[in-house]
Every structure is written in structure tokens, then in C-alpha cells.
Amino acid sequence: MLQQYFGSDAPWRSPPSRRRVYHTSESVTIHTPRGCEPAPCDARGRINTQVEISGEHIKDLIKVLEAENEREMSEVHPALAFLDITSIMSVIVPVTQLFSLSQHVKYIALEIFQRYMTSHMNSLLEYVTETTSKGRKRERLIKAVEKKVADQSPLRLITCIMIASKLFSHKKNMTPQMCQKCLKRMKVMTSAHAVIQSERNILEQIDSRLYRRSSMVVYVGMMVWLGGLGGGDLSNFRQGVVQAGAPMMEPKQLLSHALYVLDVVYMKHKEVYLDLYTILSGFTTIMNDHRAAYSHVMADRMLLGAAVVAAAGLIAGSESMCAVLVATFSHHIARISNRDILTLASCIVRATGLAVYPLDLLATP
View 1: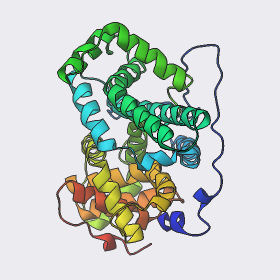
View 2: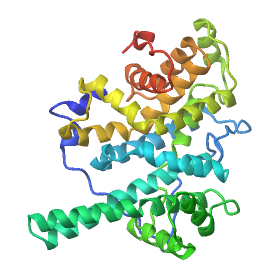
View 3: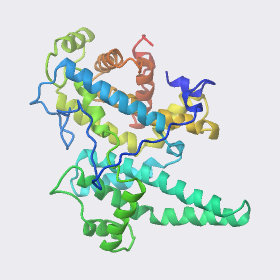
């Protein structure tokens, strides 16, 4: 399935659809898709074991997340393949840990920062190309724009973390003063007023659309539930595990491992996705004419969620546990195959420093 993005009839070759703009009377609106409550896990990434979720509810949740995922993949910006996610997360993760922020905050902050940076750079470069002709002057202005954006990026990134923190807590969120202290540690001197102005600039640039999609924590939590570990009727899952000779695992334990693996993926994002690209294409460097196509693969959250939980099942459990999880995912989500999940999971496991992951773990493609 992943190979389709490198064929002559690949969907990315068609012109991308225009992004939908949500106009509201409020400056900030959080869009929660119908069918997503109760959430598979709470704001801190903990499984909600007190809620019984029926099979029909899981099916509805899968449909909601699949539709959301397909939309984001079709509208993904080609620059996603250029962004240094590892460097971005090396700032986000310590800050969220320092202030004990929600698991969701990390990934929502990353999304906001990505959308802001791509939109902001597009606006600036469009202005430069419209007001200058080709030549040294344009090249000089483009370099000046890139330098200015790079110089402002620490302030913008910390501000995005503050914005994301406000989405998940009214009491425990970052303040401009806290942002100022973080920036001081990064040897960036600024004021609380500058942080407030930065927040305003970011919101204006992204049209105050803060929550276009669910956090990666929701995708991972849903996969844990889908594996039959979260509650309800576990008979089919238990039977599969027993037949495979794998030990049972508590849902909270698997989710804890999966969220750790998810952090590793983003901290080693370049390594993981370059490894995947090499497996798919045979090239060790992402080719320029492949970047737009590969951005779609990098934006596939459903595949990433399944691969993360599968990798966690292998690392914390066994190959048999992983096999049962992968078979369950591909059964319920037809778009992703066993091979796709295992291919990405192999890259994830290698990034953790463990042995090479057996791609022939499941014979079914």
C-alpha cells in the first residue's frame, strides 16, 4: 500500500485540494468530532478503564479518525518532508516534562508549529516573489526572510507549547512569564509582552484553527482499545494471545510503553522515516521529486498509531503479542496491511536500538 505513493498514478500527483477554513464568531474553537467521546484515554494519556466502549462505538471512532486522517493526508504540505521534527521535539519534550503538561500538548504544539511555519513561510516567500524580479536581489531577500524566521523560531515554538497547554487545562497551563523563563534558558532574551504578541501572530496566521485533528495520543489509545486490551469483551483477543503463546499484558502497561515509543519516534523522527523511505525506494536520501509524495506517508497517523502499538507490543511483550496486535489492526482497518504496519514498526524498533525487526513475522501481506 505504501508503494502507491511512488507510482506514476500516485494520488499526490493530482493538485491538492484547498484547505477548508472554519469561520466562527469565537477567536478560538476546538473541533471535537462526533463519535470521539468517551475518549480512549484521558488528557494525560491514561486509558479510561471505567468506560465500557461497545464494538459499534469503536467502529464509529475508527470511521471518524479514518476520515480525519484521509483529509490531513490529502491536504498535507510538501514542506513536511523538509521540517526537522527531531530538533523541534527536542525542545517540546523537555518543556512539557518541566511543567508536567499533558501528553497531548506535545503533539498538538508540534502540529500548531508546523502549520504556522509552513503558512508563514509561504506568505513571506509569496510576497518576495510578487514584489521582486528574478535575480540577486530576490535571492538576497529570500535569505534574509529565512534568517529572520529562523531567529524567531524559538519564541514561536515556545509560544505554540503555551497555546497547546491552554487547550487541555484551565488551571495548569503555561503563562507568558513561564515562556520567558524557558527562552532565557535557551539564551533568547525576550519579554512577556513579546510572548503575548507572538501568540497573537500565530493565531492570526493559522486563522485560530488550533485543533484540526486529534492528537497522536488519541490514535495510539484507540489502537490499544482496538487490540482488545481496553475493556469490554476480551475473549477473541485472549484466544488469539493464548494460541500464539504470548503473555497477557495490562492495557495501562501497553499504553505506557506505546506512549514512550511514540516519544522515541518523534525524537528520532528523521532516522525512522529515512529508514522507511530507504526500504520503500532503495535510496538513502530523500529525492527532491519524492518529497511531496513522501509527505503523505509521513502524515499517515493511522499507520503510525498502529506501528507504534505493534512496536510496543514487541518491545514490552513478545513477537507473538505483536503478531496478534498487527492482525487485529489490519482486520479492522482495511486500508493498512500487515506489511505496512510491520515495515514502519521495524524502523521504529531499530530506532530504539533493539535488534532488527523480523518483517516475516506475519506471512499474510
